[in-house]
Length: 108
Image 1 (tube, rainbow, N blue to C red):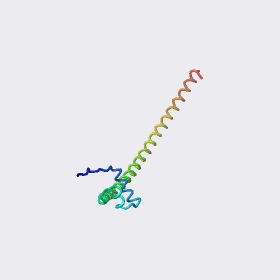
Image 2 (image 1 turned 90 degrees about the vertical axis):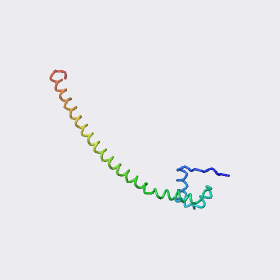
Image 3 (image 1 turned 120 degrees about the vertical axis):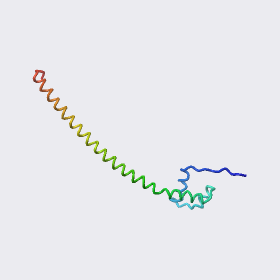
């Protein structure tokens, strides 16, 4: 009699490893509960621990990227504020010329 091979989702494996690591549930208890060999659970834990450095790499890259994005955003804001100030000056000059022209023509 052959048994069908079971497969577990990544989310399921992660939850089992979390229960073992965070909640301190013994591997033997988890294995009995799930009906699997303890060596399989040890393999899952080993896989998670082998990938642990990636969690820190991502956070460091994210921080660097955020600093660069913040700097570029600040430069962009300064650039747009300067452009807006220039446009305001041009509008003020045009309004002044318009008022002078209307006074000269007797419209005001």
